[in-house]
Length: 225
Image (cartoon, rainbow, N blue to C red; front, side, top):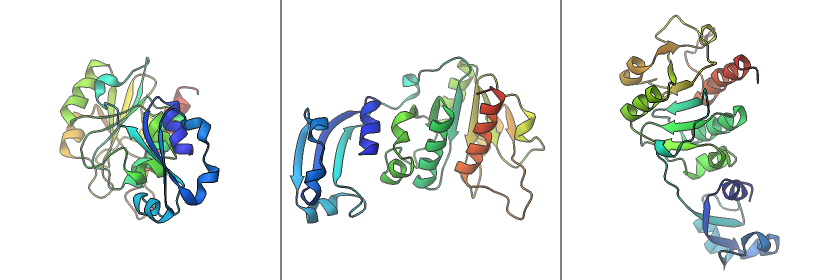
């Protein structure tokens, strides 16, 4: 229910609702009086949902248009660009962080992941619906950032500049890649600057959602929020 309510609060269109008859007494009927509601036997409902006994309600929402033209930008926006993120759970956790810092948009530059994968929705705790999100090609994103005066910072190891060396008070975009292979050559060359997080142990990478949190909260600190 938390995720469904988050979607409705952010203007996602609800099309259908299915309820597990085992838990139908818990169903808040007044919230869904404008949509078709179907009661299903427990064994059938359990086969439809992603995880058995994870919920008593299944909602079908209309997927919105997710392109760059739909993103509304304030002055000095904060954008996250993602390339080849390995796991839907990592994407969901990152969306949760973006919601926490008030980021202005999250953009997937490749088609390897879907914003509405069940693991993304669950691990984002519904913040996939509260963030502005979009899909776009890498070249399109690069041009869009330039047109909107957004400086692009690529998080990678191939630099001697730490993330704390930069000024993020103007329009800022961070690009993150896969944990195992990092960013592609395109984004390493397209970025205005490459920055890194200090790694003082034996490992040379952090979980992408952790890396994003480190950089995003530096922006919050610099902007006095």
